Each structure stands twice: as structure tokens, then as C-alpha cells.
Image 1 (tube, rainbow, N blue to C red):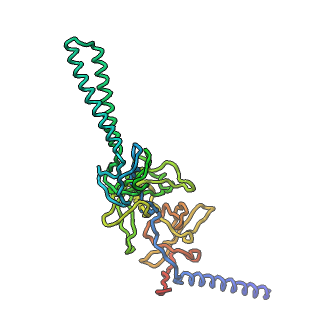
Image 2 (cartoon, rainbow, N blue to C red):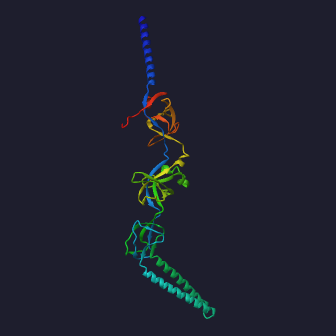
Length: 363
């Protein structure tokens, strides 16, 4: 009997000692100021996204003669500025001038013959049929004269607009054929930028207001390393995906920047401001994956929020969104600018005091 009482006493003392130790451990755990890595929650939706772009000429004109002949005048250089109406190239026009002189003579003769027969008809000396023949010959000679004038004009190429000679395709004194491209002319008051935009961005926009929803600007890197933004105007976009990627070509118009020699073929960046597009979408933030505790069975998730005033942390339930390159989106329960624990959250307890990790400079 004494032995049983002694054993019960020993067991009771052991249990009390164990419980006391657990309470002390728990209390010690709560009293520990644990160092943690804190981060400030960032917005998940970047208002501006950048895409590589290529500078292109705005509707370049490939100029050619409409008649064949020997090229006698082509003194242009690539990159040369030209004015609207300026003669750019000239063919040997001697045959065209002879044809024009012959057509003028035929027309004058037809005029005289028509007048003469008209007077004879008034005196009833000829039949009306002869006047009709003379009138038809007058119309025919007039048409031949207009054709001869056109043929003479076709021996010249004049600039349809002011711009820059982009390419000269042949040399002077060569025999050229009709429709053979002689030179390429580009406008110098307007240029285009072509960028490949992913489908994930285009699918959020209305086709009728794409330019308003995704306002764009171009960036050109200067020798100093700085960038100079230039406003862009939306022109058009392709409805067919580019080969090998789910991107679509979007074309913007740009006035050439002053002080920069921007030439077709150069590279640039197109920045797209999605502020208006994002105004109608749900606001969300993004956090590292390690900062989220997930209970798949209960379909719940939480993060540990740091209170700078008390130096303590507490769990906050959140709603998860999609994974992206920066982490995981939080669509509800957390605001941008909030400080949370980035890692080691399994060792935390509610209302536990923590301190932010600080690293020596240079480490």
C-alpha cells in the first residue's frame, strides 16, 4: 500500500513538473523577440509595361517611271532632303517632245478643218455628215494631244511629298523599264513604331478604344545613358498573331524628335500606360509565395502582418489570385504598402513581438 502511494506521488510530481516546463517553454517562446524579414507589399498590376519596338517609315513611296527610256538625270543621294514637286529623276524626253509637237499640229489642223466645214454647212455647201466627221477628228486629235502631254510628263519623277530619299535603286544613264522602281522616298514629318503586344494585354481592351485604353510613348536611349520619352498615336493593329508567338503587331505614329536622328530600322522601346484600363479591374497586390500560409483542406490562406507601432505580428486571412513572375497575387484582404513577414512564418505565433532583420552595408 505504501509502495502504491509512493508511486502515485512520484507520477504526480513528474506530471506537474512537465506541465510547468511546458508553460515556461510557451511563455519563453512568446517572450522571444524573433528577427524576421519584412517586405512592403507591392501592387500586382504595373501601370506601365515596356515592349521592344522597331522604327519604320510612314507609308514610304517607291517611285518609278510610267514609260521606258534612258535615265539622263539622277543626282540624288540617299538621306538627301527633297521638297514636294521637286524633280527627282529624268528620262531622255526627245521622242516624247517630238510626239507632242506632232499631236499639237494634228490638233490645230483638225480645229481649222472643223471651222471651215462648219461655215460651209451654214451656206449649205456641204452635208452635215462631213461636219460630223470633222468634229470626230477634232475630238480624236484632242485626245491624242492630251496623251502626248502625259507621255512627256511621264519622263519625269517628281516628289509627291517632302521627305528623305531612303534608297536609290539604280544608276544614272541606265536603260530603265516602265514600273521599275528607281528610288524610295520617305516622309520626314511622321514615322511609325511597330511593337509586338501579347494577347494577354490586348484581350482586356475594346477594339474601338484601344488607343485611349493603352496610351503609349516611345523611349530612345541617348549616349549619356538617359532615355527621352516621345508621345505616340495609335494607328492600327494586326488581327493575325505573329509566327511563333502569341503576339500581335501594333503600329503607332510619332513625330520625329528634335535633336535626334531617328531612322527607319532603329530600335526603341514602347511604353504602354494601362492606368485607364486598370481603373475598371479589381485591385490586387503581389507577395512572395513563402509569405503565404495555405490550408488546402479549409481553402483558406493567411499572411503575417507587421504592426510598426507595437512591433508585433498577427495573421490576416487573404484571398489568393494567380501566380506571376513576382509571386502570388492577393485579390482581397491586403493593401499595397502593408508590411508583412516574407519567410519563416511557421515559427510565428499571434501577437508575437518581432524585429526587422538589418544587414550590414556591403553584405
